Length: 134
Image (tube, rainbow, N blue to C red; front, side, top):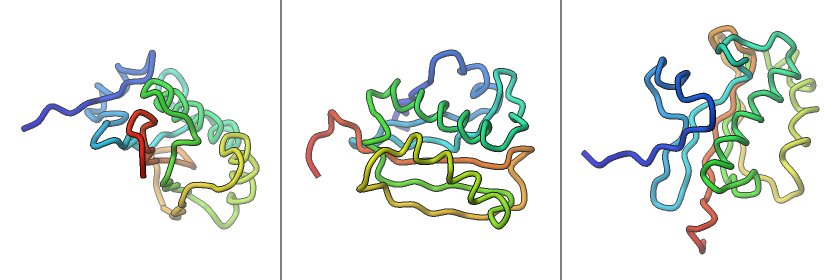
């Protein structure tokens, strides 16, 4: 089995090791990032919805930066929301703070019934800058 090229954000390695998964994997010029939630330092959910979304984006930004990427390098996004019908507008007020200008990445939004106490999760695929082309 090939060794996975794991990217760990600063200061959160113990959290990933406790739950037995990698925050992100570099592969073939891409960065595949696990779902990020708005967790506090101890792993618990931030109770305020918009603050939780901002924390999720901050965690994502930390992983991207550690891999040498930014939100501009993101090509595909999946977001999970526990109650999209009532929370979508509040969540989407935060998104432009991080997304930047068009053209935006592709997006799939999914309503779910459970996120272990969280209301929002975001996972992405980014084209790594040092993988020029295409």
